[in-house]
Image 1 (cartoon, rainbow, N blue to C red):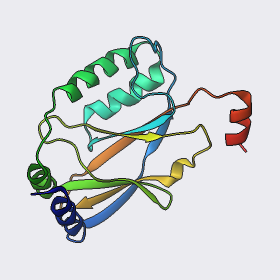
Image 2 (image 1 turned 45 degrees about the vertical axis):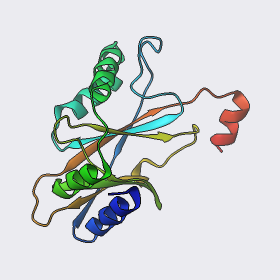
Image 3 (image 1 turned 120 degrees about the vertical axis):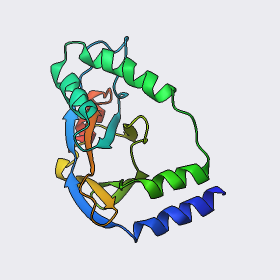
Length: 177
């Protein structure tokens, strides 16, 4: 299966599913020790997605809010988790999407940031990095749109981690207007 066929089949899957929308919490991140590891790079908003109730989302939230080094340990753990994953074929990716009880679209206002996102069946957690210039996003506009198999009770949850970019005074004044 080639890429365009997989994308068309995935798009077709959207119309077969029920929708559920929920806001994504955005947490500001100040790394405890940037030289040792980061949960998200400067100048980005990383959306972490997993099954609802997955402990890793609470661990991310706590590590960001704690500021006592938990973020470095978790960043190293997540790096190993993602490094261990293997690339799959377009056919396998489509099959995984089709088998998932729920997959997601991440939206910011009227813009789609990511589509067909879902946690890996064996390892969970997905991370979607989005550039961020330091301006004032409207937190209520970042949304998780779930595409659920009809009758599904479970679902997905997400948390967004915002890491301010380094800005000069002039840049800060421009983006905060």
